[in-house]
Length: 598
Image 1 (spheres, rainbow, N blue to C red):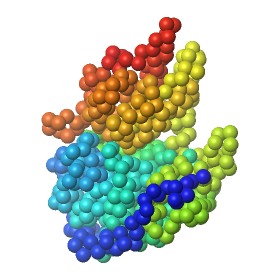
Image 2: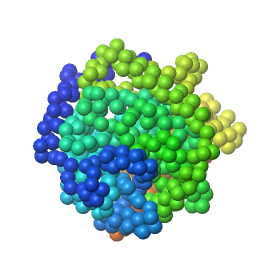
Image 3: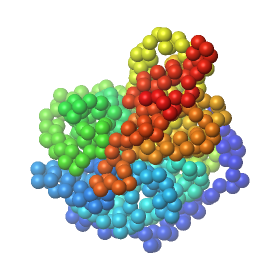
Image 4: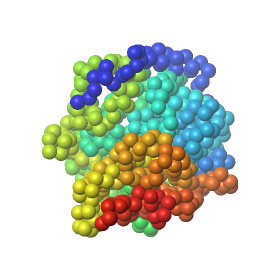
């Protein structure tokens, strides 16, 4: 069961949500949606208006996402991608910017934080300069809403003409290293939502469900219920408008289509975008083009048969290896444009009866989860009419606990979980990969770990946790005790956890271009504490050098090894490392291999 309000909130008094919203609304006198090349060109007041026009005209929007650290290159990319696509008869309707994760910190402390690979914009002028480089809508998503700098970043995004701002989903699941003040984070986020709701034109709060609870829920019904909870908080309690994004982890065709249809039924606002199914990109460029075509055609059919206003995001096929370059983004957009021309021919042969069946199932059970959550929170003492308390309570309780308490599936005491009504692709794929990898481990190795008492701290350096889930599944299957180091774990926190738990090793999953800097900080913390244990690290082992002139990350695997890290190219690479930690026939183990293993 979830904790009672008195257990969850140690604070004697919480800020009043209505007062925070009022402060945000008052700021609208000075901060309003600014000039926009997109709005001027299409004679619209906001992106929502443009989206509705596209739906009425049968046009499907295209979204291009990019993540260059250099502002000048980002500005050039906006203009060049737009122009080159238009020459070929393809329109890029909106651009998304991958801001650096340090943008989530308040501006006055941002320079002191570890940098990732994304773009840093310092003020309104920087936001406007990039946003208006082409007559396309600019989407400011990640690391704006949901972070301590939510208000100042939202002010800048509004002044640049942006009318879809996010990412609310990150508020519930992401945290910044060394930042534990969730009261300040919630206050900044809710103030920003108040400011957005008071604009003279419609400004939509963007939430990527795959960055929020949809990534941790086992049941797609709960993912839809989470969208309904967000709509209740943002629209019913805060007077705003919410739009949703999904798609990263929806691989099964019928589930991808069914969720799009169910989401359109429970949220009449035009959708933000359907993100590319990036988890399918596991091969060469040629193989990845097959994956690109598979999810794009599904999304095109979805918008043809049941238009929801979502823009489609053709992700460049190099995304699984590195940050795509400008021409690769253009190629993906042209590919999508060409595929879109053939979509009409597929509609007559498309039978959506199974899609409708599953969509209805997701919607009905999502509604049940939504209602059960509200009822359960109220019965546990929470003020479900206060937007601040609702946001903070859901964040602190966490998605997994909410699903266990209020999910629609039957409780399975043997599994200590609920049986999913519609199992998410994320859960299914991770479970499949875990079993596959366990089977690759020799019987001798599997037996050697039983009753060995090994403890491994498993953590991520940033906000992406699928690698962590895979490691935890493997270790659990090998009878290795898991110590949860958390997501976006602080190096100091991990070192303290190792000492407290007497752990034998650390396994790190990394993605956001901080691998080398993070490892060196962790190594120093371990050394200062007098701890010598192996640190395994895998994922995106890249980072942008301080003296870089092209803003692209470079591989840091060699440097990681030189600094003492154990680089793992796959989860199975952890097995020999852990086997070396087992006592030999003389009763000695090799915990000191941190500086020698390779």
